[in-house]
Length: 235
Image (cartoon, rainbow, N blue to C red):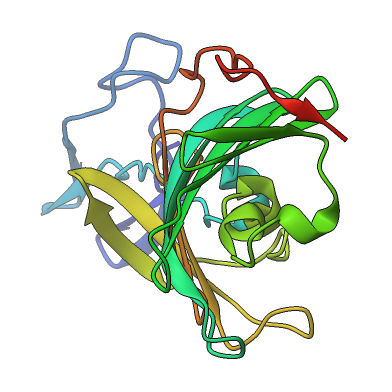
C-alpha cells in the first residue's frame, strides 16, 4: 500500500493517491520511488511518493533447555568399574561388574585383604567364588563380603535419583565424550551425588559420591553372563 500524498499547488491544499504505479497490477514489485509533477497557475510542485519498506520479522526460537528427564537413558546391558571407600565402615577397594538383563557378574577386591570375591547372578541363582578356588551356590548371607560394589555398580539406582526437571550444572569431557554434570542431593543421598550423563546418548557415564566413583561403559554391548566353570557347593 502506498502512502497518501499531499500536494500544494498554487496555495491550494490537495489530497490524492496514486495507484497502480511501479507494480504489476497486483500490488507486488513496488521497489522504486514514483515522482509526480503538478503544475497550476505557474507554480510547479514535485512530490516523490516513497515506497514503504516491508519489514520481515524473524523469530528465533530459544535454545531448548536441557532437563534430566529428557536426557537420561537406561539399558540393561552395561559394564562398570568401581573404586569405593566407605567413610562410615572404613571399607575400601576396587571392583567391576557386567550386567546383561537380569543377570550380572561382579568382581570385588577389598583393600584390607588379598581375597578376591566374584559373584555370578544367573536366572535367580547366586554363585560366590573365592580366590578362583572355591565356589558356593546360593550361600548364606554371611559369606558375602562387606563392600559397596553391589550397590554402587547399579546404574539405574543412581540414575533414578534426580528429579526429572533438574537442569545440568555444566558440561565436561570424559574420554573425549561431552557429558552433562548433574548435582543431586536429598534425604536418601549422603552429601552430594554427582552424575555425568552423555550428551549424545543419554547414558550414565560416571557417578561420584562420598562412597567413591563408578565409571559406566559398554552400554548395550555386554555378552550373556555364564555360570562359573568350576563345581560349586550347593547350600
